[in-house]
Image (cartoon, rainbow, N blue to C red; front, side):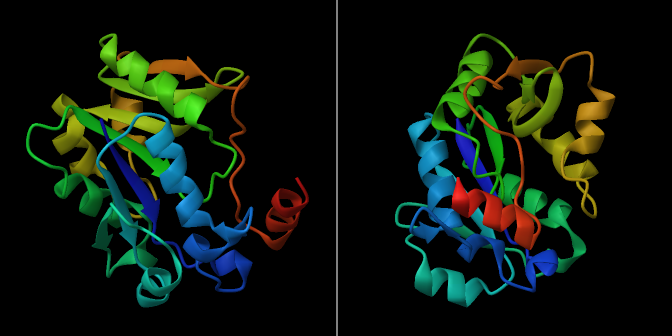
Length: 193
């Protein structure tokens, strides 16, 4: 199971600091996200960068990752998802899509989604007390449809809505926290935790 880490955001609500380089536990947030998906059982790991791409490459250790550029990152997550899905290796069984700004997602949550796929789920999403969240797993049969619907800031939302009857929610609230990191208050809360 490949992982696509979406890390292109410019952190507009964080004063323009690229999210990939936000400090988390003594290192850039993108390094944490890569470690989480690897420890959860994903390989290869593709990282989509956009804002401050050269700075991220200079400051973050992305050894062993396939690093992709989304020059249209300011248009939203959709372009990053399309770039990541287009670069998946042939024969890939699917992609676990992770967001760089969800530091509370754990390897255990990733492993639960990978296990759901191995048990037959072609579409799965982490859920937190029944509410769909991230990460999201897209099986090979749905990759083209996911890419076609990824526009603006929607990512895979259109696919998940259309295929809701096939979507398996995998409860992760006992092993992960779904909150994303979007504002200075969020950053302070995560730094304190």
